[in-house]
Image (cartoon, rainbow, N blue to C red):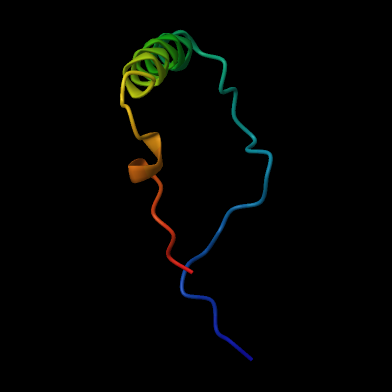
Length: 54
């Protein structure tokens, strides 16, 4: 049997995640992902972004 190498805490966390700093970071991340999605659409061959590691 394998021995765990890290201690993973149970979900859901017992803290309030809907704080002002977290919500601000979420909004910023959402804008960044939207920008990335828009720029990715301009790449002629988007298949070059996909790496198959199987």
